[in-house]
Length: 195
Image 1: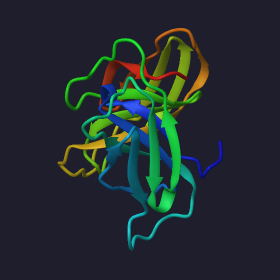
Image 2 (image 1 turned 45 degrees about the vertical axis):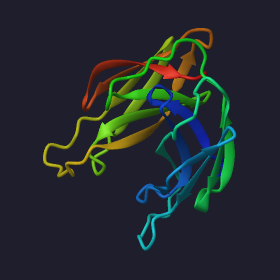
Image 3 (image 1 turned 180 degrees about the horizontal axis):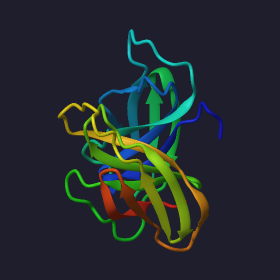
Image 4 (image 1 turned 60 degrees about the vertical axis):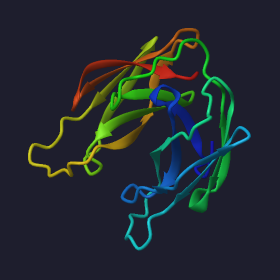
């Protein structure tokens, strides 16, 4: 996997996807309005205009809510335009798909050792990952406690955390992410897709 590749994962019970791009940790990319036709999802992902950004290179997750007509049980081709032009695809989901309640966290596999976690809350105070350790059919994901005096906007935005998973995952089992620390109190969410 090169650092120019776009990775994707099903999220939110198949109502959305997470896309991973690589770039500055201080400037999250801007996601345009997606379109869908003939099995192809097209979305523009570009750097924000006029912002001073750090010159590091990290994976950043972006959430894309899916337009009407996308069936998560079928393969989805994704075409990214803009700064991060690329294409990728997602296999359709199999079995029963648990659709979480509105604003509940969800998780999906983007690669065999990369998971995306969708949470909802202040856009300026995303959760900070501490660790993610696989143990069979569970991935124990720990987040840092928020700083006591941090100032956060009062919006309700999707935040996608890119999680590098260590340890061995049971490829033959349905995997559950156990979210703890920060705003999470041992919340269990199914991880969509296959590692």
